[in-house]
Amino acid sequence: MADDHLPTLKRGDDSDDVVLLQQKLASAGFALALSANGSFDSSTAAAVADFQASRGLSVDGICGPHTWTSLQEAGWSLGDRNLYLSHPMLRGDDVAELQLRLGSMGFDAGRVDGIFGLDTAEAVKEFQLNSGLVADAVCGLETTAALVRMSARVTPATVAAVRERTKLQLALRQLTEQHIMIASTSTMAAVAGELATGLRRSGATVSEVYDWPESERADEANRLAVDVYLGLLPSEEAVCRVAYFATEGFVSPGGHRLASVLGQRLPAALGIDRAEAKGMRLPVLRHTRMTAVECLIGPPGLVHARLSPLARVIEGCLARWATKPV
Image (tube, rainbow, N blue to C red; front, side, top):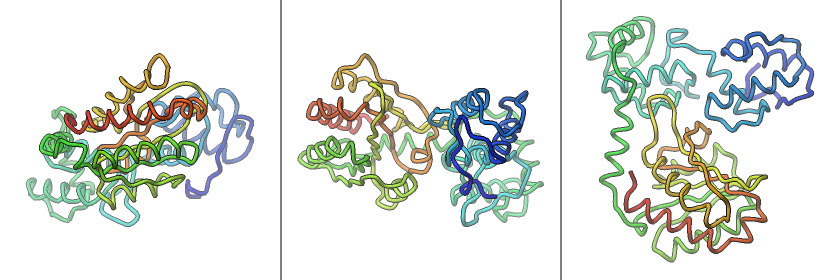
């Protein structure tokens, strides 16, 4: 059964799907002593939460679509299968390791996102050409063996991060030249709308989407080739978290910079003690191809009470980022 057809599971559930979940958690190295008894108890919830934290996902102890997908991807190791460009694209930890090894040797496989796209295929082909292998852009057993042998002593830092940093350093340095996508829920529509109005007044190009599914938000941002993706989401508690894309071997330099600026300035606007800037692998951050942050701002009541100053602070953060994006 494909993971996208599996139900969301939470504490108190009892089913064969819970057995499958427990087996996958054990295979991924979590809750090895957990009994696959089909009962979603406190220990299963704790194992799910630990797994989510390790994968840079939102931690809630509930196994939803993103967690199922991540569990499936965690089941692949480099060499388990042939890797090649396909539709839909192959995804998994094996792809991420391939990208990391290629990137660490100077072959630009793109972000270490675990998605076998065109950049990864081209990097595999270039590696094969440089290694005297058949250049078919397929990472099979022979290519894997050569890759592991040649990258064994290479520091895990990729050329993709260097390329992205250089691109940002050469970019236009004013807010007026930026195309910004603001993605929000309907509960955050008021602050998103006021922010968009202020940004347009400053000369920026703004695209707005409300209540779109995560995959559609990422696809639209990539299609429009925006400079910045900004997600505005509510939270149940008076906490603020700003997430940017980060994984082993790759940290989005633009995302990290923007999240840091927002994390420094949002608390005063919200009247809270602090905000956390955190590297994560949330799907929308993983799939977008530009500076992207997802802001879990706070309860709608708090946000609406501080609507205008909050919108002005976020606009100021974007302007500050534009002048110094890394």
